[in-house]
Image (cartoon, one colour):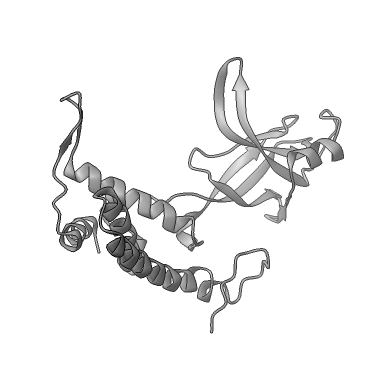
Length: 233
């Protein structure tokens, strides 16, 4: 299901064209397309936070700078999956252990003591004076003694079907996307409670099937036991 088909389905199920709303200032409007885009984007966020499809995972190659314990996260970063130091000679990846900032501070109390990074933690915003330069960053310990290549695997929100037109989720699990958007649409128009309950039931059924694939079937041979695993009968 592409975005055009999804919009048509939402209007058809709800039996509402979602006409343009003009706010009290008589200038600001909320058009039909803007309303539908909001419903769909909200549904996508809930779906992507309910399971871990491979499509929400991304990797990037960066650099640990010598004498700098901080690594800037990508702008679309949500949470880490893994962080590794790459040996440029052999190509071997040594994975760092994920800890918290307090552990890094306690284990490596002297920032000028350097070595090959072994642990990392999410640090938070980087601030230069009164300006936030980075929303979220990573601190490693010990502080790198050399310039190292880093490989970060992380979770992010894939491009929305609203802007992409077609997505993996729309092509392979359009039911969960449709019912998620319908939930938002019915809530927006203040539908009757019985209709909200019915759509919520349909959404949860579709979500459980999607979760069976994402966190169940696609994890049957997963090496990392730390991954979410959904029991598959």
